[in-house]
Length: 417
View 1 (cartoon, rainbow, N blue to C red):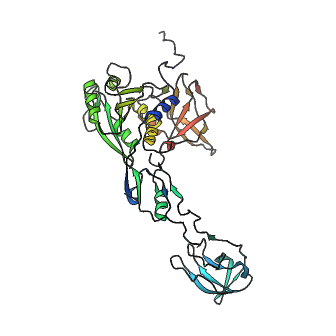
View 2: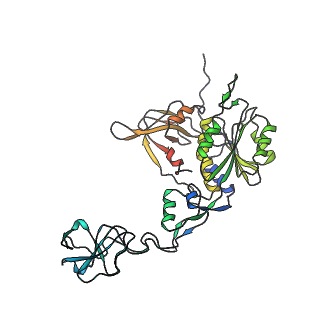
């Protein structure tokens, strides 16, 4: 049997580069400008809407960094009597008599005339006095006032995601309320006459909709409110009706119906009710990505119907768009390069992302290998992966031992977003 000749190139003259797509999306996205004030106890995972400045210096006094004794460095060659104590929350006297010291604990206020704290392990205690075995230098083990932050200094910048460290910082400065961006409202739906809900029995020719659970989980965040619009049939009337049901959302995301098949109607509807800015991307999987506006100031992403394609376009395009709409700083992912175990075949013409696993080999060295079959419907390949291998536009693949560019899935998490 004569087989058709193998294609030598996978390029599409109508597709734009990943870089151009990202730039066009970034330049046209609307920003979420509304905000609200929350107590810090309820602000986890939200986005700071205004710079937060410190109302106090922290620490507000000279504090001990060790358990030990507050001393004057000029007297450490003598036996020093213990004439007081300063415990955390229970400060001792402001000054010390000549030839004396104060017992002190970590975090306690240092007396005004002490200029060092001697670690207790460097002293010998004898009948209510101490002998110092290792002479301190001035300032040793003393935290100056404002050494963490000065009053009036910026603590948290606008656009910062409020995680554990940020909320602890606010609490340490006595701040109990903060202005945050209102939740970004995302409306989500799938298109396809072949789709069924998981609780339904499958009739011939139908499959279960995995994309909505996938995308809802990917974009779940305290900073986001998701409205699930369900499954939409493959016809223009239902698609337009579903988009009408998404009014009020800041961002609409659909999956399926964005290719060039007979049942792909999203583009026609979008051009009629809104606008289309991007239609095809020079990447694999995920070429049929659509970006535009479903109504005035309402951004729209139409993701491919195959679940792996939907996942990758969601990670590479939608997540950065969400960050930008929330006023967050774009993520700059550090490059990671690892040796490939096995072989990868690829046609030039598109940037290709292969699902992969990076792990330590028996020699203690990191390596990366694909998760097997890379067809865009194979969700098991995504389940087994912890990273992507990125192959450049002109690449024809890679051989075992070649150094390849790796993008860990951790790059996409940012804690929450």
